[in-house]
Image (cartoon, rainbow, N blue to C red):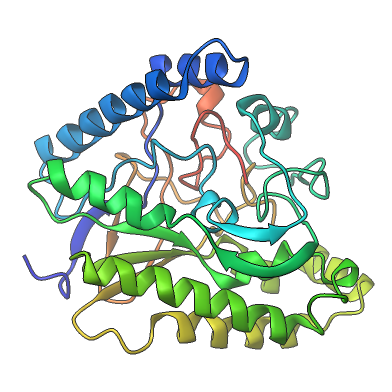
Amino acid sequence: MSLNKIRTDVVGSLLRPAYLKEGREKLDEGKLSAAEFKALEERAVAEAVALQESVGLDVLTDGEMRRLNFQESFGSAVEGFDAAATTLRTYERRVEGSAPGQRWEIPELGGHGTAVSHRRPVVSRLKLVRNIPLDEYKAVSKIAKTPAKVSLIGPDRISQRFAYENSTAVYKGMDDFLADVVAIERTIVSSLVDAGCRYVHIDAPGFTAYVDEPSMEEMRKRGEDPMQNFARSLKAEADVVKGFPGVTFGIHLCPATSAACGTARAPMMLSPSGCSTSSHTTVSCSNTTRRAPAASRRCVSCRRARWSCSA
Protein backbone atom coordinates (compact mmCIF):
# COMPACT_ATOMS: atom_id res chain seq x y z
CA MET A 1 0.00 0.00 0.00
CA SER A 2 1.23 3.48 -0.85
CA LEU A 3 1.27 5.84 2.12
CA ASN A 4 0.76 8.71 -0.33
CA LYS A 5 -2.87 7.73 -0.84
CA ILE A 6 -5.96 8.08 1.34
CA ARG A 7 -5.79 5.53 4.14
CA THR A 8 -7.50 4.66 7.38
CA ASP A 9 -5.67 4.49 10.69
CA VAL A 10 -6.10 5.38 14.33
CA VAL A 11 -4.48 8.63 15.34
CA GLY A 12 -2.29 6.85 17.86
CA SER A 13 -3.65 5.84 21.23
CA LEU A 14 -6.11 3.04 21.91
CA LEU A 15 -7.97 2.40 25.14
CA ARG A 16 -5.89 0.56 27.70
CA PRO A 17 -7.17 -2.82 28.83
CA ALA A 18 -8.13 -3.07 32.49
CA TYR A 19 -5.21 -5.38 33.30
CA LEU A 20 -2.71 -2.79 32.02
CA LYS A 21 -4.22 -0.02 34.11
CA GLU A 22 -4.23 -2.26 37.18
CA GLY A 23 -0.65 -3.21 36.47
CA ARG A 24 0.36 0.43 36.20
CA GLU A 25 -1.25 1.18 39.55
CA LYS A 26 0.67 -1.68 41.15
CA LEU A 27 3.90 -0.51 39.49
CA ASP A 28 3.39 3.00 40.89
CA GLU A 29 2.78 1.52 44.33
CA GLY A 30 5.85 -0.70 44.18
CA LYS A 31 3.76 -3.88 44.11
CA LEU A 32 4.83 -4.96 40.63
CA SER A 33 8.32 -5.19 39.15
CA ALA A 34 9.36 -3.38 35.98
CA ALA A 35 9.86 -6.72 34.24
CA GLU A 36 6.38 -7.90 35.19
CA PHE A 37 4.85 -4.66 33.95
CA LYS A 38 6.79 -4.85 30.68
CA ALA A 39 5.22 -8.25 30.04
CA LEU A 40 1.79 -6.67 30.45
CA GLU A 41 2.74 -3.89 28.01
CA GLU A 42 3.89 -6.42 25.43
CA ARG A 43 0.62 -8.33 25.78
CA ALA A 44 -1.37 -5.11 25.34
CA VAL A 45 0.64 -4.09 22.26
CA ALA A 46 0.15 -7.52 20.67
CA GLU A 47 -3.61 -7.28 21.26
CA ALA A 48 -3.72 -3.74 19.83
CA VAL A 49 -1.88 -4.85 16.70
CA ALA A 50 -4.15 -7.87 16.26
CA LEU A 51 -7.26 -5.69 16.63
CA GLN A 52 -6.15 -3.18 14.01
CA GLU A 53 -5.08 -5.86 11.56
CA SER A 54 -8.33 -7.78 12.06
CA VAL A 55 -10.42 -4.80 10.92
CA GLY A 56 -8.18 -4.11 7.94
CA LEU A 57 -6.58 -0.79 8.86
CA ASP A 58 -4.00 0.35 6.33
CA VAL A 59 -1.53 1.59 8.95
CA LEU A 60 -1.35 0.69 12.61
CA THR A 61 0.22 1.83 15.88
CA ASP A 62 1.18 0.06 19.07
CA GLY A 63 -1.76 1.84 20.70
CA GLU A 64 0.80 3.85 22.70
CA MET A 65 0.37 1.16 25.34
CA ARG A 66 3.86 1.85 26.69
CA ARG A 67 3.13 5.52 27.39
CA LEU A 68 1.41 6.97 30.41
CA ASN A 69 0.79 10.16 28.42
CA PHE A 70 1.17 10.86 24.71
CA GLN A 71 3.60 13.72 25.39
CA GLU A 72 6.15 11.30 26.83
CA SER A 73 7.41 10.81 23.27
CA PHE A 74 9.57 13.87 23.99
CA GLY A 75 9.10 14.77 27.67
CA SER A 76 10.42 11.44 28.94
CA ALA A 77 12.94 11.06 26.14
CA VAL A 78 15.13 14.02 27.10
CA GLU A 79 16.98 15.31 30.10
CA GLY A 80 17.42 18.97 31.04
CA PHE A 81 13.95 19.85 32.32
CA ASP A 82 13.31 20.57 35.99
CA ALA A 83 10.72 17.83 36.07
CA ALA A 84 9.73 14.63 37.82
CA ALA A 85 8.07 11.36 36.97
CA THR A 86 4.31 11.27 37.33
CA THR A 87 1.92 8.47 38.11
CA LEU A 88 -1.36 7.19 36.76
CA ARG A 89 -3.11 8.96 39.61
CA THR A 90 -1.56 12.28 38.55
CA TYR A 91 -3.28 12.11 35.17
CA GLU A 92 -6.56 10.88 36.59
CA ARG A 93 -6.60 13.88 38.93
CA ARG A 94 -6.14 16.21 35.98
CA VAL A 95 -9.50 15.29 34.48
CA GLU A 96 -11.58 15.31 37.63
CA GLY A 97 -14.50 17.68 37.20
CA SER A 98 -14.18 17.85 33.42
CA ALA A 99 -17.01 17.09 31.04
CA PRO A 100 -17.57 17.03 27.26
CA GLY A 101 -18.65 20.36 25.78
CA GLN A 102 -17.26 22.43 28.63
CA ARG A 103 -14.13 24.53 28.74
CA TRP A 104 -11.56 22.93 30.98
CA GLU A 105 -8.34 24.31 32.37
CA ILE A 106 -5.67 21.80 33.34
CA PRO A 107 -5.09 21.86 37.11
CA GLU A 108 -1.50 21.81 38.36
CA LEU A 109 -0.19 22.56 34.86
CA GLY A 110 2.85 24.20 36.43
CA GLY A 111 3.32 21.43 38.96
CA HIS A 112 6.54 19.49 39.36
CA GLY A 113 5.61 16.68 37.00
CA THR A 114 6.67 15.18 33.69
CA ALA A 115 8.03 17.64 31.16
CA VAL A 116 5.66 18.80 28.39
CA SER A 117 2.70 17.31 30.25
CA HIS A 118 3.47 20.10 32.74
CA ARG A 119 4.84 23.59 32.04
CA ARG A 120 8.38 23.28 33.38
CA PRO A 121 11.66 25.23 33.24
CA VAL A 122 15.01 23.70 32.34
CA VAL A 123 18.17 23.33 34.41
CA SER A 124 20.42 22.46 31.46
CA ARG A 125 20.27 22.32 27.69
CA LEU A 126 18.09 19.50 26.42
CA LYS A 127 19.69 16.20 25.51
CA LEU A 128 18.15 13.05 24.04
CA VAL A 129 18.76 10.21 26.48
CA ARG A 130 16.08 7.65 25.59
CA ASN A 131 14.67 7.41 22.09
CA ILE A 132 11.14 6.37 23.05
CA PRO A 133 9.58 6.52 19.55
CA LEU A 134 12.40 4.39 18.13
CA ASP A 135 12.08 1.78 20.88
CA GLU A 136 8.32 1.63 20.26
CA TYR A 137 8.71 1.28 16.50
CA LYS A 138 11.32 -1.47 16.73
CA ALA A 139 9.04 -3.45 19.02
CA VAL A 140 5.82 -3.07 17.04
CA SER A 141 7.44 -3.64 13.64
CA LYS A 142 8.61 -7.07 14.78
CA ILE A 143 5.06 -8.34 15.32
CA ALA A 144 3.02 -6.33 12.80
CA LYS A 145 2.25 -7.57 9.30
CA THR A 146 0.85 -4.12 8.40
CA PRO A 147 2.96 -0.93 8.09
CA ALA A 148 3.31 0.80 11.46
CA LYS A 149 3.55 4.47 12.28
CA VAL A 150 4.87 6.35 15.30
CA SER A 151 3.55 9.53 16.91
CA LEU A 152 5.79 12.32 18.18
CA ILE A 153 4.71 15.43 20.08
CA GLY A 154 5.54 18.48 17.99
CA PRO A 155 7.56 21.61 18.79
CA ASP A 156 4.47 23.80 19.25
CA ARG A 157 3.20 21.93 22.29
CA ILE A 158 6.73 21.60 23.66
CA SER A 159 7.21 25.37 23.41
CA GLN A 160 3.83 26.03 25.04
CA ARG A 161 4.88 23.90 28.00
CA PHE A 162 8.33 25.48 28.41
CA ALA A 163 8.63 27.92 31.33
CA TYR A 164 11.14 30.11 29.55
CA GLU A 165 10.83 32.92 32.07
CA ASN A 166 12.51 30.67 34.65
CA SER A 167 15.08 29.27 32.23
CA THR A 168 17.07 32.33 31.14
CA ALA A 169 20.29 31.02 32.69
CA VAL A 170 20.20 28.17 30.16
CA TYR A 171 18.37 29.48 27.07
CA LYS A 172 18.46 33.09 25.99
CA GLY A 173 15.01 32.84 24.43
CA MET A 174 12.41 30.65 22.77
CA ASP A 175 14.26 30.56 19.44
CA ASP A 176 17.35 29.19 21.19
CA PHE A 177 15.24 26.56 22.97
CA LEU A 178 13.33 25.49 19.86
CA ALA A 179 16.56 25.07 17.91
CA ASP A 180 17.51 22.29 20.33
CA VAL A 181 13.99 20.81 20.21
CA VAL A 182 14.04 20.66 16.41
CA ALA A 183 17.53 19.13 16.37
CA ILE A 184 16.50 16.42 18.84
CA GLU A 185 13.28 15.65 16.99
CA ARG A 186 15.11 15.41 13.67
CA THR A 187 17.47 12.91 15.30
CA ILE A 188 14.43 10.89 16.43
CA VAL A 189 12.82 11.02 12.98
CA SER A 190 16.08 10.12 11.27
CA SER A 191 16.50 7.09 13.53
CA LEU A 192 12.96 5.98 12.75
CA VAL A 193 13.57 6.27 9.01
CA ASP A 194 16.79 4.30 9.32
CA ALA A 195 14.84 1.60 11.17
CA GLY A 196 12.34 1.35 8.30
CA CYS A 197 9.51 3.58 9.51
CA ARG A 198 7.83 5.41 6.63
CA TYR A 199 5.01 7.17 8.47
CA VAL A 200 5.65 9.62 11.29
CA HIS A 201 2.73 11.34 12.92
CA ILE A 202 3.24 14.72 14.64
CA ASP A 203 0.96 15.56 17.54
CA ALA A 204 0.10 19.26 17.54
CA PRO A 205 -2.97 19.60 19.80
CA GLY A 206 -2.08 23.15 20.80
CA PHE A 207 -2.39 24.84 17.40
CA THR A 208 -6.05 25.55 18.13
CA ALA A 209 -4.87 27.88 20.90
CA TYR A 210 -4.10 30.43 18.19
CA VAL A 211 -7.78 30.83 17.35
CA ASP A 212 -8.94 30.68 20.97
CA GLU A 213 -9.17 34.09 22.64
CA PRO A 214 -8.74 32.91 26.27
CA SER A 215 -5.64 30.96 25.31
CA MET A 216 -4.20 33.90 23.40
CA GLU A 217 -4.95 36.19 26.33
CA GLU A 218 -2.87 33.92 28.58
CA MET A 219 0.01 34.33 26.13
CA ARG A 220 -0.37 38.10 26.18
CA LYS A 221 -0.31 38.10 29.98
CA ARG A 222 3.10 36.45 29.77
CA GLY A 223 4.23 39.19 27.40
CA GLU A 224 3.97 37.03 24.26
CA ASP A 225 2.57 37.80 20.84
CA PRO A 226 0.29 34.86 19.89
CA MET A 227 0.86 35.30 16.17
CA GLN A 228 4.60 35.42 16.67
CA ASN A 229 4.32 32.19 18.65
CA PHE A 230 2.23 30.68 15.86
CA ALA A 231 4.71 31.64 13.15
CA ARG A 232 7.62 30.31 15.19
CA SER A 233 5.84 27.02 15.79
CA LEU A 234 4.92 26.58 12.12
CA LYS A 235 8.55 27.02 11.12
CA ALA A 236 9.73 24.60 13.79
CA GLU A 237 7.20 21.94 12.81
CA ALA A 238 8.23 22.28 9.14
CA ASP A 239 11.92 22.09 10.06
CA VAL A 240 11.38 18.80 11.89
CA VAL A 241 9.93 17.01 8.86
CA LYS A 242 11.82 18.51 5.91
CA GLY A 243 14.34 16.52 3.94
CA PHE A 244 13.03 12.98 4.43
CA PRO A 245 12.07 11.79 0.94
CA GLY A 246 9.77 8.81 0.78
CA VAL A 247 8.42 9.38 4.30
CA THR A 248 4.82 10.37 4.99
CA PHE A 249 4.16 12.83 7.82
CA GLY A 250 0.80 13.45 9.45
CA ILE A 251 -0.26 16.12 11.90
CA HIS A 252 -2.92 15.71 14.56
CA LEU A 253 -4.90 18.76 15.64
CA CYS A 254 -7.37 18.82 18.51
CA PRO A 255 -10.24 21.13 17.49
CA ALA A 256 -12.61 20.90 20.44
CA THR A 257 -13.63 22.05 23.88
CA SER A 258 -12.57 18.82 25.48
CA ALA A 259 -10.93 17.57 28.61
CA ALA A 260 -7.71 17.05 26.73
CA CYS A 261 -7.55 20.22 24.74
CA GLY A 262 -9.37 22.89 26.71
CA THR A 263 -8.94 25.35 23.85
CA ALA A 264 -10.86 26.30 20.76
CA ARG A 265 -14.64 26.28 20.73
CA ALA A 266 -14.91 24.26 17.53
CA PRO A 267 -17.71 21.74 16.93
CA MET A 268 -17.01 18.32 18.37
CA MET A 269 -15.94 15.77 15.76
CA LEU A 270 -17.27 12.30 16.46
CA SER A 271 -15.98 9.22 14.68
CA PRO A 272 -17.97 5.99 15.00
CA SER A 273 -14.92 3.77 15.08
CA GLY A 274 -12.26 5.95 16.66
CA CYS A 275 -10.32 5.99 13.38
CA SER A 276 -9.33 8.91 11.19
CA THR A 277 -8.98 9.10 7.46
CA SER A 278 -5.79 10.82 6.50
CA SER A 279 -3.81 11.61 3.39
CA HIS A 280 -0.29 12.73 2.62
CA THR A 281 0.63 15.49 5.09
CA THR A 282 -2.35 14.53 7.19
CA VAL A 283 -4.53 16.66 9.40
CA SER A 284 -6.69 14.42 11.53
CA CYS A 285 -8.64 14.19 14.76
CA SER A 286 -10.57 11.32 16.22
CA ASN A 287 -12.29 10.27 19.39
CA THR A 288 -12.03 7.06 21.30
CA THR A 289 -14.15 4.10 20.26
CA ARG A 290 -17.87 4.10 20.81
CA ARG A 291 -17.42 1.08 23.04
CA ALA A 292 -15.43 3.13 25.50
CA PRO A 293 -16.79 3.30 29.05
CA ALA A 294 -18.10 6.67 30.17
CA ALA A 295 -15.09 7.34 32.37
CA SER A 296 -12.84 7.14 29.32
CA ARG A 297 -15.00 9.32 27.05
CA ARG A 298 -14.24 12.62 28.75
CA CYS A 299 -12.48 13.78 25.60
CA VAL A 300 -15.08 13.08 22.95
CA SER A 301 -13.28 14.57 19.97
CA CYS A 302 -9.67 13.77 20.71
CA ARG A 303 -7.86 10.48 20.94
CA ARG A 304 -6.52 11.25 24.41
CA ALA A 305 -8.63 8.70 26.20
CA ARG A 306 -5.82 6.69 27.66
CA TRP A 307 -6.22 5.54 31.23
CA SER A 308 -8.57 8.47 31.35
CA CYS A 309 -8.25 11.63 29.33
CA SER A 310 -5.08 13.67 29.88
CA ALA A 311 -3.46 16.61 28.14
